[in-house]
Image 1 (spheres, rainbow, N blue to C red):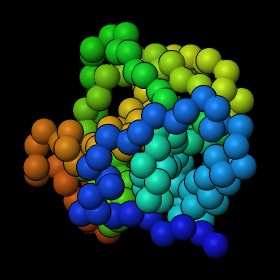
Image 2 (tube, one colour):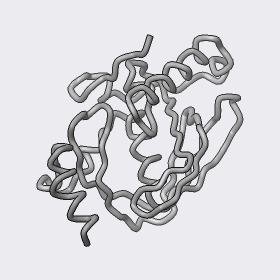
Image 3 (cartoon, helix red, strand yellow):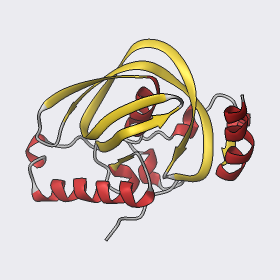
Image 4 (cartoon, one colour):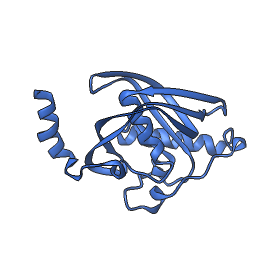
Length: 180
């Protein structure tokens, strides 16, 4: 069974998620959670998803961007599990992208985020890992990690006029960007 996505307004999306205990990472229930995250991400057409989005307040999210191209950037991040991630901004210079979210269906918003970050995390084998991310990948990682700290992308929108329904984004904004 595919878990439903928790949408904006559900209080779980505004809570800071609990750390995952190292001893729990190898458990059957944690492996089941990873499987459910992946199933939900694929079913709903996401490129990443965090546990709070399927009703589990744990600091774990997944991202998969193989052969992905957006904003003229080729990104190849294989299926990656981020457990108890800690983010470090390597360069505070920001760039903005139009973001969408499974938990905020039907909307897009222009968000500016740091474009050079490092994430320290545990993987699904409880191994310590780091990922340096730049450009749109940095934005995707920050977007997913925000869910673990009770944040949604709409919290970062500086200009409320840069919020759009998906259909209007496709018609007026995406087509404008394509024609320039």
